[in-house]
Image 1 (cartoon, rainbow, N blue to C red):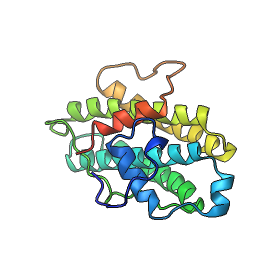
Image 2 (cartoon, rainbow, N blue to C red; image 1 turned 45 degrees about the horizontal axis):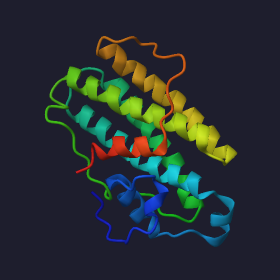
Image 3 (cartoon, one colour; image 1 turned 90 degrees about the horizontal axis):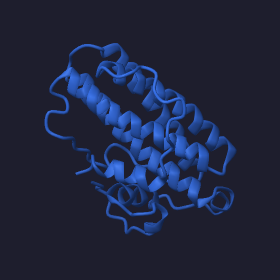
Image 4 (cartoon, rainbow, N blue to C red; image 1 turned 180 degrees about the vertical axis):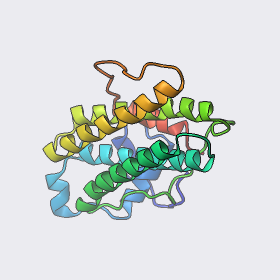
Length: 199
């Protein structure tokens, strides 16, 4: 969980205030809101940005562990990790531009079910869960964010996450082409999904 000791001052910004919500809000509290930025960027947009930062940190951790486990598909895993790093950089920059400090890998400890990286099939199964969460999160953000630039970034990231999901669904014997209208996830549901992987 978070190693930062800041008091949680925005407990309500993530509908349920789960473990990840606390870690992300505590990390951002160190930077605070710049006066001009707080007036320019809606609190809801910043809440989504904080949650997406945490989600990208989970994705980066997952891909790093998957690559370290060896096996096939290394090139695709490395490319997907590079894409997740780019997503993180973009979302973190939104917070930085608003005068906040985004969470980093040192702020949140992730944990996974036993055997998650024991085989290529196990990695692919977990990949389906995590990329489904990421896709739903970015689709939810694209539909909810008020700042046009943020909506654009979220929609573009969702397209990338859909590609990652396609690779994993094919690897577990599913269809490479998924739903023509994938479901968007609300903020609280994404927070709950993240909580499953925090220790």
